[in-house]
Length: 178
Image (cartoon, rainbow, N blue to C red; front, side, top):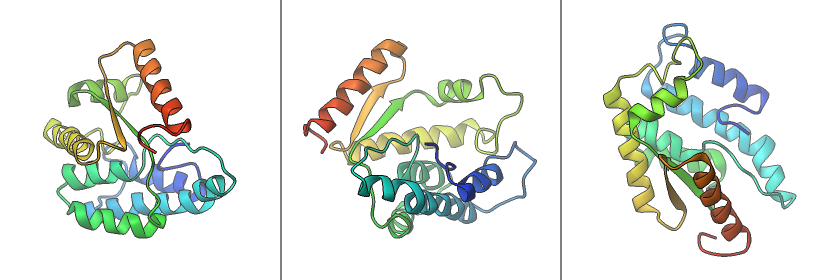
């Protein structure tokens, strides 16, 4: 599943939030954070919550940490308040395992823009913004080393895959991070 997205409301909010730079309406950092959180609340209510109640394993490409990194560290909103509003929106549902692919901001931007003509609203922000986001993710990982597994983004695809498989197997078998 992708975030924001997956649900009908989430997809509409995704289009608004990630419209190509200059195409969407201007929006404040607070509005942006709340829209991401609204999409997340819907995702938990419609998809993640029901799946967990059925005993299923849920994998998402982004979640609360993205808001903390992008809108908190990147845009300068208070991280503690973002944690609170996301706790409220998700019923305090946090992941048991977070995989962080750690790359310099320039590498991440190059990868995300590959194959697209125009950058989205977030990608179009300057390199300083993206450097703050990377630093924010690293800080989050340092603050919660039990949940986070940091993966060197310069590893080959097969090496990264092997690392991810080991981490997920460890979690599912009741190892560290549970």
